[in-house]
Amino acid sequence: MSLPSGVVSSPNATERRIQSAAARLLNRWSPLIVSNRAPYEAIHDGGFNRGSGGLATALLSLAEATDAPWLACARTPRERVLAGENGPVTVALQGRPKVTLHYADPGRRVYSLYYSTIANPLLWFLQHYLWDLPREPMLDQHQHTAWTDGYVAVNRLMSERVVELVGLSKREPLLLTQDYHLYLLPRLVRRLRPEITMQHFVHIPWPAADYWKVLPEQMRNAIFDGLLANDVIGFQTERDVRRFLVGCEELLGLRTDYQERAVLHRGRVSWVRPYPISIDVPGLSHLAASPAVRREEDRIAAWKIEKLIVRVDRTDPAKNMLRGFAAYGLLLQRHSELRGRVQFWAFLQPSRQDVPTYREYLWEIKQSVLRINGLFRTPGWLPIRLEIAENIERAIAAYKNYDVLLVNSIYDGMNLVAKEGSLLNRRQGVLVLSENVGAWEELGQDAITINPFDVEATTAALYQALTLPHDERAGRASRLRATVKANDIAHWTERQFADLRELVGRPAHGW
Image (cartoon, rainbow, N blue to C red; front, top):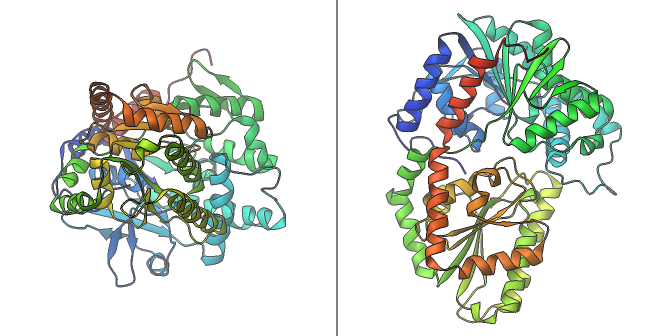
């Protein structure tokens, strides 16, 4: 989930900390943020809407605090028009500081090859371990063409625009590249402007070296080579850092220092660090106290029964909803005393319905819910309440009122739902958390940990969560809330800026 624009019209404590950290950064560098999607989406009437997703939420305050321009791909007809005008676009919504946007337009066909064939699904599925390897992927001429004519072409176009924009910098440029869409960009920029300081943050999981062999050698080597052009490479977790270092050693034969977390490549040292992304605690808390959320809570009170299990997710196969429903069905089968006393509320946002796999997965979700409801429902009780909608106020109302929050993703870079729910819940709710999500490194000791593939264990975890003594529930909930508050989005930003100041230009020990 992400905060809508205008939630807090004046800077809150988190934003002031980001501004303070940014001020120290600006003594040396002039930053440029680069991502596939802009933080604001240009709409047909000439206005802008706040973009969705954690990336925009995490970086928007940074862009506002530093006045950093933001370069993105033109994805919509309106954005392509703006790209054709060749000038910057200034956006300031509901009293927020202005953000300057620039667009690069690769054209509809090239963008589709880059995004809909390579970035999604090929790289997304690979990095979330989603491929059914005996059957998929089938890398034929279409994928190879999409790589060269789409992914490589868009990364090259974006790198050329980066070089144009950093040429306008008054101080030393700092390139902050985001995520899996633009892995090749840093190397392309480095060839044109070798002196630029660069950091790349990867928001999704980094898989083990052997799994990268799903890709042909030239593709995976280009991805590693692109990332290693950065001075600092950021991942969500320590586990991701280790896997990247092992991949550099095993796939490319590079000199790797696990203690320093550094890689030597093409005569340069790249530093690799974990930066667990988080949430804007004051902003989210402010929204949770709003009249709109209270109205949603009143609606929940009209149908809520004794115990409420909640999940808030996108309808992405990585979220593992089918096994979650199967575990709940087993719970009702084995514990008849819970029937009529517990309800599972799945509040889901539709995701990537232009991709056939995602459409099929949503159909399977609906069929699974129909089956379980058909087996167990009674005239006054619906076992699973399924809602497919986008409504952040309703999602926050769900966070505040759960008894159990189920986060059983197959793999996730972080999963902010676990952090948002832990912060906002007011019922001493219990977090049931997959060991394969990034949030587990911070929250796992106070959650009930599950293997996301083990339906039997997930059933037992749900029962344990529903029946924990009050004191234990309260203790876990309190510690989870404290952890999220201590490691908020400002902390994420401060750590990255501190490392940039410390590491850039420093030789690794013994190299």
